[in-house]
Image (cartoon, rainbow, N blue to C red; front, side):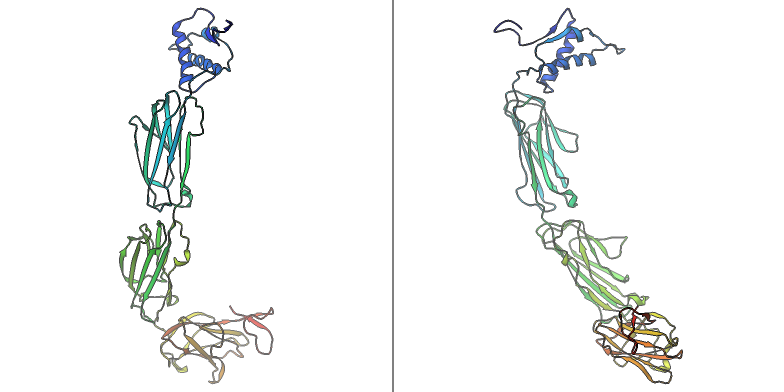
Length: 484
C-alpha cells in the first residue's frame, strides 16, 4: 500500500492464519454485494462479506463457525473508496394511445427497453402500471427469457440484460365498460430497474401516458297512447326510445318507467339494444352498454287496474334514463311526460239534484269525484258548525278542466258561489263562515270541459290568523285565513 507509484489501493486480507473454507463465506458475501446488490463503496462491501459469514457459517446446532475471521480479516484502506466498476445504463421508453378513447375501445401500450452501458446487468425488473379500468389484458415480448412476476402491477423479470441488448413488450387490452369517476385518470407508467450501478437513472421511468375518455350522452323519448280520459280496465301503451348521442360510449345504464300503479296484463316488446328487466323492481331495466349512435326501444302495454285507488286517478308518467359513466347533458335524460286521466267509478252517482245529494261528514280532506258531461252536476249535503269559517275547494285533475261552485242553504237560497276567478289553474274555492249548524248543499258543475275529468273536493276549517293576510280576507274584518 505504501509502495510509491504502484502497489495496492487498499487491502482486505487476514492478519494471521485462517481456514480457506471460512474465507469463502467472506468473498461470496463481498461479491454478492458488489455484483448483485449494487454496493459500490469498499467499506460496506467488506462488511457485507462478514455479515454473510455471521449469518450462514453455522454448525447444525446453530453455533458460529470461523468466528475468529470476523476479527482477523481487516480492511486496510479508505472504507469510502468507490470500487471502479464499469457502469450500466438501463433505459425504458414507451408509447400509449394517441387520442381520446371510448368505453370498450381497444388499448395498446408498447414498452421498449435496453442496456446502453458497459456491463451486463443481472435480475432486471420491468414494470408497467396499467389503468385500473382496463380489462382483457394480454402481452407479448421479443425476449423469450422474460418471465412475468406475480404482482398487482404487470411486471417481468429478465435473468440478465447484456450490454447493448434491447427488447420490447407489447400489452393489449380494452377500456372497461364498468367504470366510474374514481377510475380516472386513465393513465399508465413504465419503469426498469437493476442492482448494478448506473451513470444516470433519469431514463429508468417513462410516462405517465394519459388518455382522455369520451363521455356518452343518453337521450330518451316517450310516446303515451291511451284514451283521454281512460277508465279502469282499458289499455295504455308507453313507447320508450333511447339513444346514445355522445361521442363516447355509456355503461351502467338503467331505464325507469315510474307509473303510479302497476298495470295488469302487461306486455313488453324490446328492439335494438338489449334490456333486462330487474326482477325486484317494477318497470326498471338494465340496458347493455351503448356505443356512440346505439339505440333501443321498449314498448310497455297494459291495462289500467280495475281496483285503482282514487289518488291514482291522474297519471303523469315520464320515463328516465341514466348511467354510471359521465353524461354531460342530463336535461335530455327525462322524457316528456305522458298525461292520463283515469275516470274511477264515482261511488256517489247518481247525485244530480239536491234530492240525490249524498251526505258527507266534516272535515272532508280528499274526496275524489267525476264530472262526466257538460250537463253533469254533483250535489252533496253537509252540516257545518255555526260560527266556523270553512274553505270549500275543488282541484281539477285534468289539464284545461275548470269547475264552478255554488253553496245553498236549507231553504234553497244561494249563499256563495265561485266561477273560478282565482289565478291558480284548475282550482275553485269558497271561503265562508257558517252562520248556523244547519244542513247546506254544495253543487259542483263543469266550467271548462275538455273531456270527462276527475276532481278532488275538500271542505276544511280555515285557521284564523292575525298576521298579514294569507288567502282571502273575511269581508268586513280585514283579517285573513291561512289556507291549509
